[in-house]
Image 1: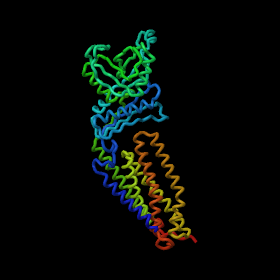
Image 2: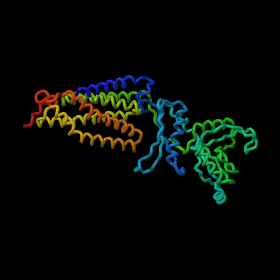
Image 3: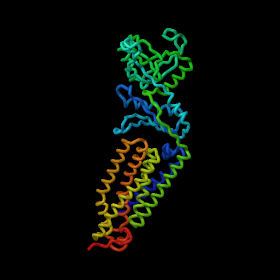
Image 4: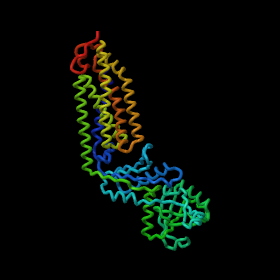
Length: 439
């Protein structure tokens, strides 16, 4: 009966191996997704200026991310990554940044143009008192920005508006939240001018005649039909809720990325073979079992990376290799406890059972601290650190399963009950000598 769990683990391992090797084809839904440093492409880092944001700053930043994400998807990039980054709380200056990764795109200018042409749309009230006092037109922010824009359309004036008959005008339609805010602004400021700013420049300053509850605003700037059409297109691509400035760009060629990927794989393979060789030479039969458990650990980790899915980067490969060492460390703790039990005269089967029980608290605490570390790194780190932390964290979980569960199942199944002395003492010992039984 003790062989049934071991057979079950072997069957499960076979299924994991089948899944890992049959889902690597081009276009496979579960293929490993490579990061920019391994696949090649362009990385753009923008600084977001949130100084003028009133109220929900995080909401504005989330809207910025969504808008840019829509933008880069519209020009056909495969699996782009758009994410926000916040500087550390201990940094001298606090910055909000937007990281844009475009796999396969090596034309930086085209990428920057595609994102940078998206307009910043704002609505500001003309401050009559301040304007009169200073002689310079002064504006008051209303909080209504392109974040609340649902869509825009091109129309031509009928002649009964402030625009000349046949002149192109741009009609804006706000979302539900923007409709309520626009109605509130127009209702509370009848008779005042509400200026419409595009990319920081006022393009129209109509007087509010009455409250506008319908969520529609009209821009009647001096547009040519081509300018109006381009403006509508760009607004529909997504008006940026806050201004952004490009602070750095980096391009990685596909050949360089491929070299980094293969170098990482070779490093991982060499590391695994060296660890396996050491375990088998030093811990003999137990080391062989640990090596089998390590293979299953690798399959579990690959399964997690494919199914979650995790975008694999060079730092992620480093975390993967490091977690192999953690998996082996757990087995070393177990085998040393087993060796102590053999020294005290226990038979091999009982030594295995007791050895796992005695090693468990140290293994549990070690893995828990590693998980806490990976969570902190993922929470506070940049994208490069997050790639390392995520893969390392999943590796820690997989190593706990392989070391505590898989190794135990195999050893409990293969080491016969009441086996003592001689061969089994040698097979479960370590180094170059057999442990003597303590009298």
